[in-house]
Image (cartoon, rainbow, N blue to C red; front, side, top):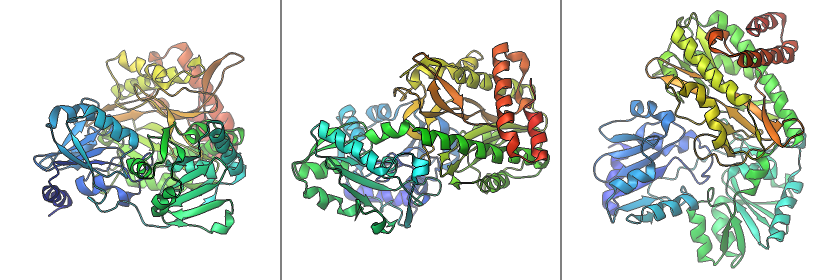
Length: 572
């Protein structure tokens, strides 16, 4: 009996009609270790986002967003799981329309947030939600994570100063403490990192910060010398309930989006009053300080050196390389850079039809051999101690078709359109998203993913609260934030195109306006640019960008790489 069938049998035993399984662990807004990916182990789906509804009767359902509409059906058994794309049918809409009155829904209160559970209970009054912590064997990875300091030369602000801000805020608002459950917020607040995850150096822990500035840290499998951090108290994660019991009748801030619903239950039991407030650490860390910005810019320069060396190598050696060869070779170039720590996510090296799968990652079973005549979509990034990078370039191998050239040019036009934008302070990403889509819309084309996401500093490559998309991006943009700009187009069974730079949001002149300054300094593939489809302003932007790339990066290269870069950056 496979794992899905075994869980369905368990539903029958418990008299539960279905089980709601998000791709989470107890750190709800974080990525997870591969060993913790229960959706993958149960269904075969390897994507980075999704929700599995295990049904006692009939097909189970896997809900994915538009990035995985093509991928998910290829990885799951259609006789057992129906894939539903939320770009067409929203999750709550489907549940409302398809689950009968009295439906008994199991869930793990450690892996669903207070906000999500409350929204589901409000929108789905006909469903009875039943908390079951041990329905699926714990998904927490038990590999020890070495904890280390994120040095002040990179973080720019000491942990003592950050904690003082929190305690002052609590005192001002007459609250006793703040319980932070978002691991990246705790990592930022304490200037601590760890090697718990392959590509994200977060400290997987909760932090209880009192109004007097005392900090209690609750983590699992943290490998550290507590004497190095005398101002912090460390506890195992399972000590949190007893700890909260000792703080009866306190008034505590939490962020309902990142706090598991289990915390709410514990606090009710001990008469602790919870007040919702958006994660103040998330707001602070989105605004990079001058030291962070300086380091991030330098990290992108080193990243550009690695990418340009790689692209030069690829230009002469792509024939008969595989996608997995490409992943390994790019890593080899990146790992040579100063302050390199790891990749920032698994590299997407997608050749030809694989490129149409938005977040495809090569595996032995899908590993294509590169040859002339199609496109390579390469989305990759790195963690450096002084910054986090993320870049996508689409590269023509050999001679591309006119269709590929023209569509790539429309994608580039969208990228330029948003990159050139000047907009008022605190404009939301939702208001800017259409600038990137407009050139594609004019040709009846579009893409089913967001246009931009925030990026951390030696933290998450996808960082809230900011974003640029058609929805869920209402956070106001401000100077000092970092975002990606990444429009694309995907033709099923043929090719994929995406162009991504990271950009710093900065003040524009003396006015109250903002603009984007590119951080990524790697040329676009001119074989995929049709100048006839560009207006003079777009051509000028490309030429100015390429001139900046050449002037900044060429002094860091040897003569052969310099020569290749000079040709790649030649004016259109």
